[in-house]
Length: 226
Image (cartoon, rainbow, N blue to C red):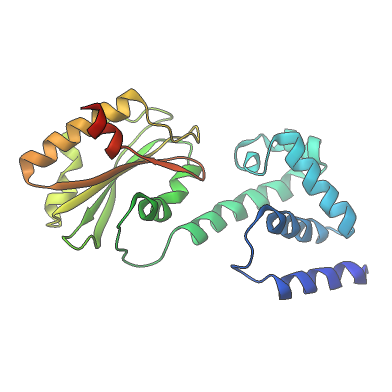
């Protein structure tokens, strides 16, 4: 048994518990610990992490890349990479999505609530129903595409809002490409939704586009764009 490797794990987990640090160095060390479970030395584990990142352009590629290619370039078995992929997805959902009912006061709050959408490979459109204190009453996916396109009927968007008696609403959708930069179609849709909400006496607080680890708010752009 490699006692030095075991001591390294215990020391790291004791000194850098959940919520401490959070930088890339922490991610590298945790991945090294995970690889160390396969019997690799500390140095070999860290080398594997660096090799995996440099060959694929970052850790996010583990979520999207072909497992066989990742295994070949990193030397990590495909089944272990598949396990890591599931763990990363679960971790993002647990860390970025707060539990319970939320008060949404900014686009950042919306992103934290729905950040896991940035990991999805299908575009989906969500409606967040709020009361006059911005307390989340209900959230619902009203449309889901087959890839990068999501066909949305604006009339269907307001059904859950009216059903739960909300006075305010936030719209959100993801870009499977990972880039949250809004398209001209996104801006046009937001203008139409604002017009529809006005007819119903509803206040639209925001429309947030969610990418992988980042987001954009459309409201200022729509207002400035007329």
